[in-house]
Image 1 (tube, rainbow, N blue to C red):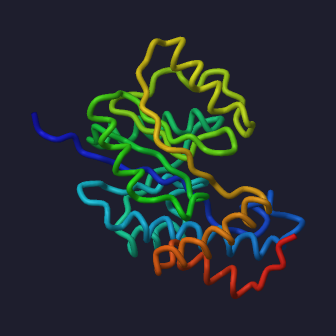
Image 2: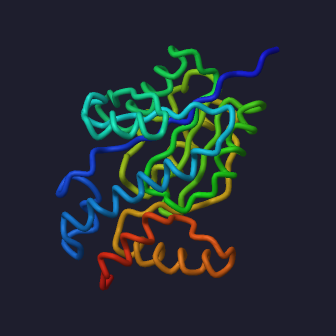
Length: 231
């Protein structure tokens, strides 16, 4: 059988001050928060650029016609789709459905709040989808940083309380109730709060000392440029 076409769907917003990373405020200003979010986007796109045999699709909050998204698509060779749906679960289900409509047989979704995510985890997700219809990347905050499917997403998002620490537990319950098979990746973390940002700052220092390379160059640059006194 021919290999299924692979899509990596990246959920993103336009980095407008006051509309992104609002949980970093008021400790950080809206402008500083938006600069950090933009750095997250750029690091995510740079980190995923080497993926082979994978088409990256930017799922755009608001509209894919925004000049910001159009510039990113041209710079990073991205396809653009709109996010549609009344909640996160619906938006993810619709994004995967759109990828299948475009001819992709495997689709993996990530956000832009995980600038240090090892690209190996994404590659591992696609490997799991060869044998399992679902794959989840559990997050330390009780959600998940990645979800993928090799077919339309079943009703695993029904009744999930988005934005809470119960998201992963409730999703796994739906998977069990529907008697589905799902592979799990290693735990990782995303960055939503000032506490998360504090950990990220220290993690970047550790990773650079360990590997001699900067894991998220743009994020590191912005954190140093802003000279943030993270409480």
